[in-house]
Amino acid sequence: MAVNLLDFDLEGLTAFCEGLGEKRFRAVQLYRWIHQKGESDFGRMSDLAKSLRDKLAGVAEVRALPLMSEHRSADGTVKWLFDVGGGNAVEAVFIPEDDRGTLCVSSQAGCAVGCRFCSTGHQGFSRNLGSGEIVAQLWFAEHRLRQRLALPAGVRAIDNVVMMGMGEPLQNYAALVPALRTMLSDHAYGLSRRRVTVSTSGVVPMIDRLREDCPVALAVSLHAPNDALRDSLVPLNRKYPLQELLAACQRYLAAAPRDFITFEYCMLDGVNDTPELAHELVRLVQGQAAASRALGRISCKLNLIPFNPFTASGLKRSPRERVLAFAQVLQDAGIVTTIRKTRGDDIDAACGQLAGEVQDRTNARERLAARRDVIPIATVGGVS
Image 1 (cartoon, one colour):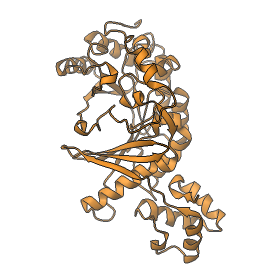
Image 2 (cartoon, rainbow, N blue to C red):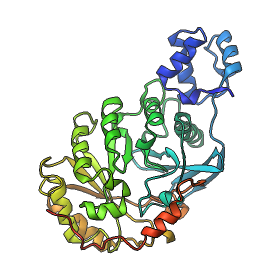
Image 3 (tube, rainbow, N blue to C red):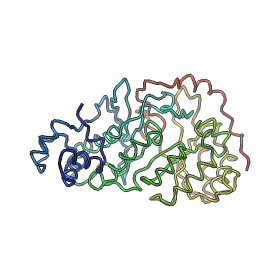
Image 4 (tube, helix red, strand yellow):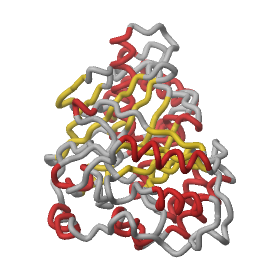
């Protein structure tokens, strides 16, 4: 099979072109044609030497993901379903806002973490996506939207990317980093490090590696202020408990493009949404709880997310008044707190709703069903 050039960051493409006997500047030209202009036909890459175009035609291609469906929400959100083979499909979502266009990108076909409140986790896990499959979501969306919106040359449709689609990005690290580098490259999409966010459920060793290899904005799926409750909601917490996770966040801040970590907190009715737990969360991030006392205050922003219910979860969305009361406790303590506006829920494109189609290899449905009745109630607290 021909090599898919979407798999390469610029250094990888340079090495590939050198293997064909070409100089680095040819790789830069090719990279720009692919990513800045969205071109997949080597014959139309007019400033490449004909000899190079002929070489590429025999050994390489720009292979997009087959589009299975497109759905548009009443609020302007667009969701695409892409075929990644083997009976698997992944979803990407474009969210238009007044000041930016955000693309939510998937990193895996399914997810092995199995968070209780996430529809993707209930689908189970099939495989990691390759770098080209990650980048292909941005490649398709950017150039499809430029045409649809009739944007002039040099104007981006997407200037914000969040790795918050299907999968745990840091469990697909080898493919993630080249994809991030392509997103950031001035010869490709030219995105700011502040405008590329990796969301993780807390894979501590990979947080440290990302800090060294490609620091971008970091969002951590927290969802509970103590280990007992978080163990039941985010199973990965049993391997990397809060003290280890918060220490990794502190270390990450030394290299992060922003001076804060975003903590995501999905609001679950009767589970994690009481004022008592809000106060416990304040103590945790301000370094007053046992899990964080040695670390001190952590610079953070709290993003409260309304839960998007699905039947298999057995969970309900917190009433708005309880979400507001929870937010008020945090704000009164001086913590920057936002409540995420639900977008695209009429097309199942909102946070936690992405499911795609996954040939599960992990028996996720059975495991999650067994845990359904063992979630602690909201009055459970940690030692503080």
